[in-house]
Length: 192
Length: 292
Image (cartoon, rainbow over all chains, first blue to last red; front, top):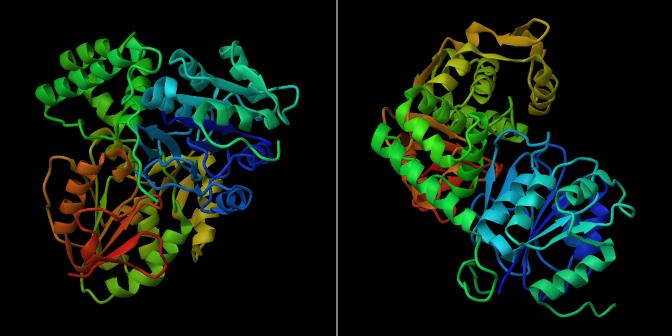
């Protein structure tokens, strides 16, 4: 059963995301969609930096890009990235929580399209974006993983998500890859 | 690698039962769209579902209603609610000179071709609140081409077009717009194109002189002229694949031979109905020339 991992991060997210991607095996069986808050420019530097630090292919999708297992999709700057069953959609609707891309937009669409087969991951950030979306995922009985706010570079994002989803799984960043492999399928990290 | 497409509902039995509320919402959306089609003739059934769902939820909230079903009731009974619905579906939030490299390429690769025509017709399809139309007008003014151009700027929503026609924008956006204009390599002081008070700016009427703002529905209306340049940026991301192909055919039939089609940075003509007859211009910013 294939799953969709939706990851949201804001301030301090780059390091947390690379720690997770760096520990996922090439045969990781889920698709990973990431919203990292970023400036609205045309640069695809973030994609390149993540690709250098991951064994999985990292893609900045176009509208309609198909989701494939073991692939990572990073939301392009100045677009919302939404999940459809089996593909990604983009939008230029108004910023949500002053952010475009917005984590809520990703999570809510993942909840509607993948329901309990989605997995939400809320990482460090200094905004409440993602909390409402995490609640939607939880409503669909999708697992929600929240980075331990006490170890996050910025705790607002994970703390807000926890207040909306109190039973979320609280983990250190280094524990998250193992959990994702258990949920989605793939070889355990040999470095563990 | 084999292409694997997911169907999240394919394995029904192995997970927990699918959430009933979600299924009800899917049904409500379907009924709402059917109702709108029967009552008003607008067909939103082939809009991209994830964005549409988000927007409909937003409208339900804005109308302070408890559900999509109650929105359906209000829309069927009150035409004014239908207008608000259309307006909220037609207002993506864009910026002047969004993607400056696109406008740089328009200037360097497309303007020389436009100069060869005694009279230039341009269609800006899905112009929303007009930011990108005024950007195009500024570009043409700076290239001394504006006087021979006519820009047809169309949108689904009359209310949105009225805003575009006024050319009034928040002063607070001007910092970003000026930055974009500078990245584009504009020749003047950006503020010379508008007049500001303490909250808003109004763009100069001379930019509007050759722009015709007009209502047009890409889903149901046909071609209305032949154009040398068509811009339709970040519009087709709101459509599903079949509707996108229909709209591309409409744009294609409205474009003269060797005319240029510009789409959004994250849109593509790949795997579309018209891809074989178009070549992307060298700057690779989603400007395509119709080759046959």
